[in-house]
Amino acid sequence: MNEDILAKRFITTFNFVEQHLRVSLGVPPEARFTQMTQKYFERRVDQKDRFDLDAFASIRNAITHSAEPLFSPSIVAVERIEAIFERMVNPKLIYPRFKVDVDCVALEDTLASVFNTIAQRDFSQFPVYSDKKFHGLLTENGLTRWVAQHVLHTSPSVNLDGATVADVLSLEQSQGTSQFVPKTMTVDEMRYCFAVAPDLEAVLITETGDSTEKLLGIATVYDLLELTLNSKEQRD
Image (cartoon, rainbow, N blue to C red; front, side):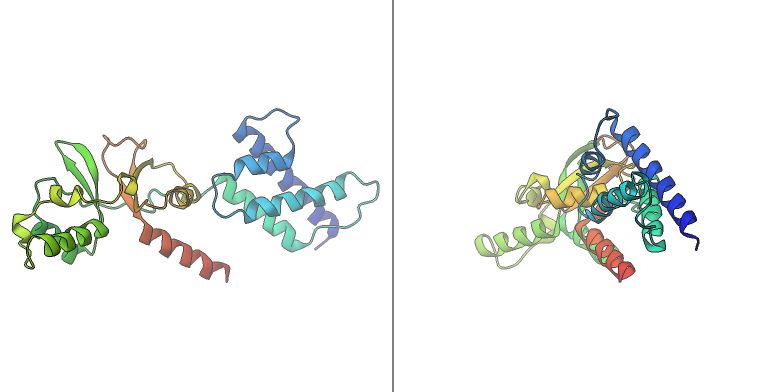
């Protein structure tokens, strides 16, 4: 491909990226490009796009600030910056990607009914609601902990019909196992939520991230692992 065409494609896309950064961040005209990329990508786990853009800034300077351009960007660089810009303006959202009919349980539900649902639906995280109020997330760890405590301190046999969700919820290790998020959250932002909160097991998706709103979906730590593995396979 003609070098002039590649250079024009590269510069045009770089300018689009720079404009998008300025508008998204609301920064003054004198803000440096690397400052903008640092701010824009600060809530991203994967910083590769940021580092590539910072490198592309040097290429842009070499093309535009020299009387005689030192070199022309390769087709790989052009396609790379175009792909980054596409991800910036059309990021992958968690909804409807993780849209699902969420199985919820109540404080008074028996563990027998919970384990029955686990067997049928293969779920292990359940939002707990009573009187339309969110009380926490029932997790696999919480269930395991309750069974162990019961066997050690109460009885070697477990009567699942005689125990309730409330019994298990009191033994959940942390109140930080769940987080409500808006359906407009990006997949990258969701990754960041899990990265900065080690106890987080699920994000609960509603219209605006309010716990009083209808649940639209759920994404668990297992979904994140699958997402990461799929992304790695695509890169490989």
